[in-house]
Length: 232
Image 1 (tube, rainbow, N blue to C red):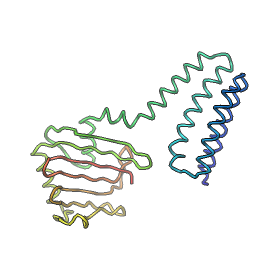
Image 2 (spheres, rainbow, N blue to C red; image 1 turned 135 degrees about the vertical axis):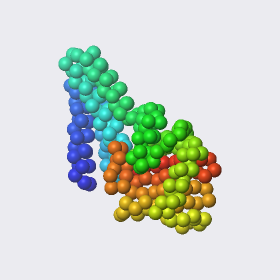
Image 3 (spheres, rainbow, N blue to C red; image 1 turned 120 degrees about the vertical axis):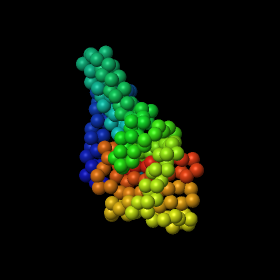
Image 4 (tube, helix red, strand yellow; image 1 turned 90 degrees about the vertical axis):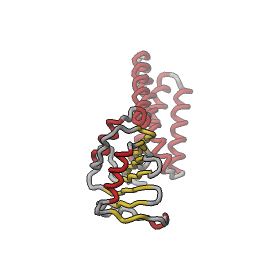
């Protein structure tokens, strides 16, 4: 068990005790037993099972619940139930917005965002384009992906840039032996297959979202550009 897990465990158990003690002290013993007991069991099970995935996913949710619960019952204990209700409602909305941030970013993703991302990679779209799909997020690793429908002119210009670059490795028909960029270097890998033009590289400079491994794929048939940026 590392230092972070030990500190997080102490914080969680400390907050769990408050979730039990404050309602109990107010006379709501059953509420205290249920809240404190349930939280203690969940935390203990994740520790005993050494479930790293659940620790990373569930513990932040537990802390959010504990903060909301303690905020409400602290004010209730001082006979300010309405204040506690308002504060807990505000905290709940705030935490929900935080949890939903990846989906909110997807919903608000625009052509301006696409242009900004592509400009980071020195790619310019001179004609109008259509965003076919986009997605951002991830649990342990963060990914940002999108697919665009390009004009013939933009497609031809970008594909020619790949095909005539100094990093172009050739046309590959054996999909089991495709080249890939080395994370130890910042060299760009350009190549094509029967269906795609592709570019991949790792960057020294991270984007604002923390991504530094990038892959571009141009679909020859559908004239689509797919982008993947990740932090792994």
